[in-house]
Amino acid sequence: MALVRMPLSPPVSRRALKHTRSIKVEAFARDDGLWDIDAQITDIKTRVVTLASGSRDAGEPIHDLKLRLTIDLAFNVVAAEAVSDAVPYPGFCDTIGPAYQSLVGLNLLKGFRHELKGRVAGIAGCSHLTELAQILPTAAIQAFAGDVIDTRDGDSANQHEKPFQLDRCHALRTDGVAVAQYYPRWSIKVADPSQSS
Image (cartoon, rainbow, N blue to C red):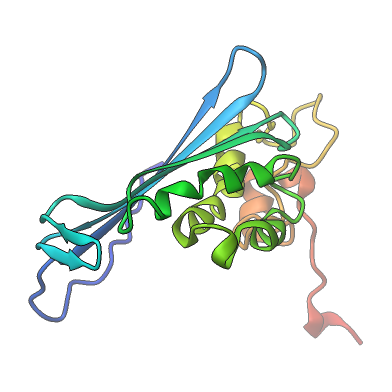
């Protein structure tokens, strides 16, 4: 099947790059059966920036923050670690890392984002690390897909449960065309409202 690309529309005006925020997430299967989900967020300006704490050269990170959640196969957080290698207020921003150990015991698929806000939002955490943590549930699902979570077509004889990814987004709704095409065993035919009497 050919890959269909859908680029953003061309800019309507000339533009100059001023800021780049990069987010990177990597997942590692560990020898002990656990998984490490490592996430990093960086903010870089294309010009010298003067902050209250001093200036930063163009290309020098204003933020370079890392968060690692160690999870088990049921998505339970068993360890958490946060570090801040570049921050706007050294000696202050970079002291919040231990607060993220409060995420231990949470489950990435069961109210994680709500609990996250309750534990490390506002002055209880770093806004950038907390924002980064919010994307880790779906990143962990992607990491587990096809390895820990069976995401194959449900027509196989040994598949007795609906594939994990169904009914988790608009494309893979069980009453939709994609499921009818790729997961026919799990397709639900929706009654046509015009046919009801």
